[in-house]
Image (cartoon, helix red, strand yellow):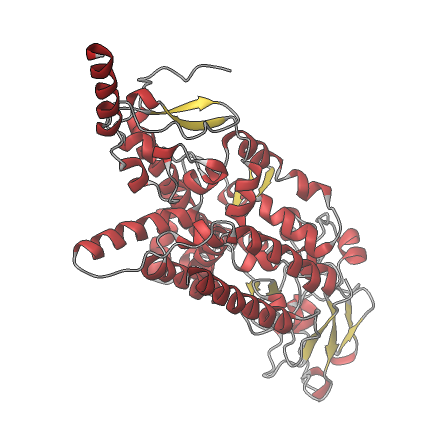
Length: 337
Length: 192
């Protein structure tokens, strides 16, 4: 057993901002890539003189953006293609583990080149847990903004629902998705997995001139999160989240509470997007190591550690009022009696 | 109470999924919609099982001919790629097969011999009642648009087109036909 990493480690309070930077960058990539793809087609067609003014502007912007990095846009920009669902990155194909699971179920055959494309994400998830959900997922970017919107609406006096369901519901969704994919012989999970939908729909909107059916589904999940259950889709329904949770069950990198430094302020619980209970040492396989609780903790009682299991409930924090009252009474009793 | 709500939701969710599955069904033949799958596609059923709907084929296509289904062709083929050759035809660059991660579109070398043996998107068919050349007005546009001239299509008297066995069905002839409606069409081949 290793000791918790001694605080204060550098940037611990800024990790959450770094996470936002990561989410923002991924989302920005998903927006820029379709434009670059369109630009590529214009270059390939030598079409600049024939373009309408708005497309000329797009051409110019994309040329400015990409010209420092590529010599021949028509071929060199092929280096980065696709979305977080499945993409090509300088010759390497990287796919979402859920894509591999869904596709293998639908085809009932194993296509190794494709399975191997999920190797890096799977290994990272085994080590870091559900980090994809917190640090990369383009849907998380919008869902967390949606959470902020909900907070503002609440402040403005709207009554929004915050129902709680069973978190294990999403494993049922995953199982159903896999079974139905196998039965129908069609990768159905792709149609209900928000990051896959987002990547696709942005491409449709940019390159094909309109959102598809998936956009409707995604807006419905946004409304579900806003009006019914906070962050409900990720917590209770997301099949990809379920798969990542299962893979990250024994992740070595996990957040722990240093009970001596905890003052029971409950800020960590309030800020946890996944409705977990850091103050009672309940992280479990759901925690996505997003570090929002670390950033908000006023006494730096939450730290990253290298362990494969959570601690059992350590009880009240030693800086908290309840713990101090009990212990001061104890000390007093020992002095007097 | 919470348990009852939960059960109700479970039933509704199961019902919705069952409807979805029923609507998706086995890969059904499309009725009325004449589309091509991108070059190198597996047979339709295997294609639907393989395609993960990532959209990379469309993103890689330099000719922007690859479109994506919404619900027009049934739920089973939602978000899968297709080509309407009259709107934009395939230029057989084979980039889509290279980016496809699952082999739903097989990677095929960009070389005429390989393309002719491995690509089977469909086959062109000439409607002689519509074709200008068959009406005595020399045209030959489809022949000139074909990337496999004299191998996939040859012209006879008055540039009357004759489609040969090597036609892969890229659709460039249909795209270029100056008749409205087009006198040459691709009959899709879904057998892979």
